[in-house]
Image (cartoon, rainbow, N blue to C red; front, side, top):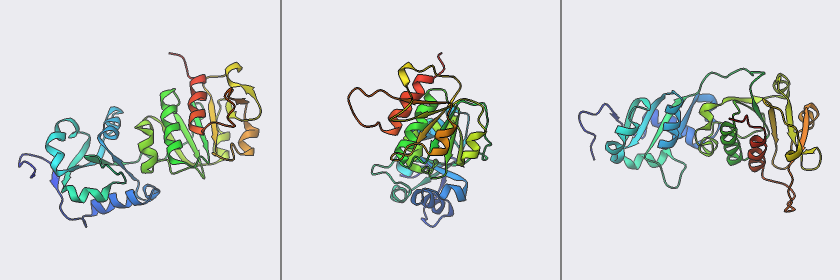
Length: 260
């Protein structure tokens, strides 16, 4: 299928095109965004989520066969539209069932810690799905800032961004943070534990606050544990040893969420 002559989209047919090389690098290397300063957002949902925050992608890349049916609804998400042969798109995805489109977006400048914002601290949470799910819950329950300590999965990697379902765009995300960065916070620091602290459902919980979610196996590190204003644990009457960190995060965030 050819692109209509009236279309403003650029057609690219060479796999050696610099734009496609850049996207392939982002797809293959989860941390490449740190060097390139851009992320690859695959699928119309992420594009729409970006636009809903008043943000604009740099480039949208469409399957050639799908462009005509997509341009009316997704043609204004990026400053520039590109169409490529369907066969080339297979190299730009890590998904078994590729989306019809993707968006290249330049990351915002690295923010400084805002000491007074409701915050989530990720202490070496390593699974990309867990990190994305936690960010999604954080945005849903009114948290505004995320401090991802060194050792946490690459926050802007494709897997994390897809799991976050657009939550990233509404959060102040600070990567490669340190314990010293956390110490700047002027909101109460709450830490979860599987073996000590008050029961979450009985605790008097502050808002705003900062929740610390720890490593899947080791939990929260000693330094952050010692800094906490409050230690809490989640009742598990079913008898399981512990909860998945993303599930625990959602429960904790809901418990402290600012009531509408």
